[in-house]
Length: 283
Image 1 (spheres, helix red, strand yellow):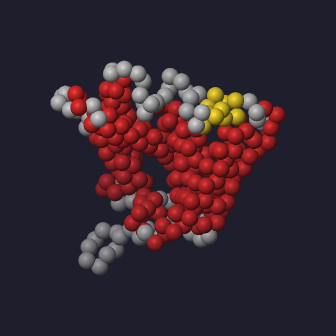
Image 2 (spheres, one colour):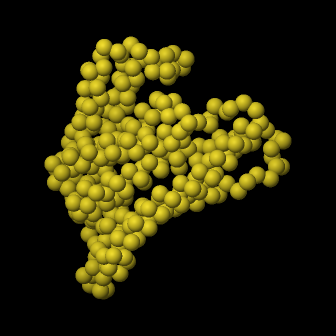
Image 3 (spheres, rainbow, N blue to C red):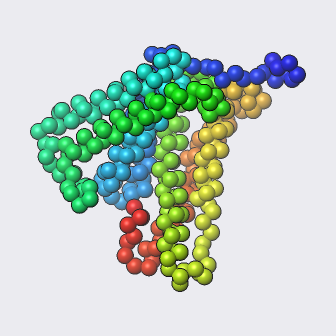
């Protein structure tokens, strides 16, 4: 209890044991990597096998998010937790590389700067990306310990809740590529319109819905984490906390945010395409 108030003061000091944090990093690195990749695939669902390099980058970034979070949540040896989790994530792809060694020369259909990419080169690039991003995330997660406010809610979540929170985390992270693509299209279409004077005076569609979708996503993450981390939130009533978590994750993140983002993405994808050839910046 605070000295001048009657509300319990939350102290963001909950941490995972070294072993639990290591398992968390290894487990969630796969979950969040798959979530990021699914978000990228959703953006080009008509040809899900395309953009393998972009999917690889998304996988590495998703893995890095989990590894950085594990380093942040660990009570001790935070850098070691991140490094060990990184090598666990990388080792799976190295094993796959070993078992596919007989067909490593086959083409993946992707190319880098006009040069075809073989299965072996693709797996080596992916493994290297995961290693680089994982090590960088380990360092960032360990050094962010000095900023309690950055992840205060995460530090208050009891370790046992992470056994099921991966379901919600998958939904949240899978939306990140869609939100990033929305901002990318905003920039690309704005530059396209700027260099075509005949578009300056045309009345375009309102493109604020996607921004509202991004806001809905982050509001959802905030209210959902608060419901799990703070026992006094929403009156301290358990059913209200559960309801707010479900409203955030099932309604805001899984329904409202995707609908709003898709509306604006489809509008922006149609703006340049209506003028001729398929633009390179549209997936």
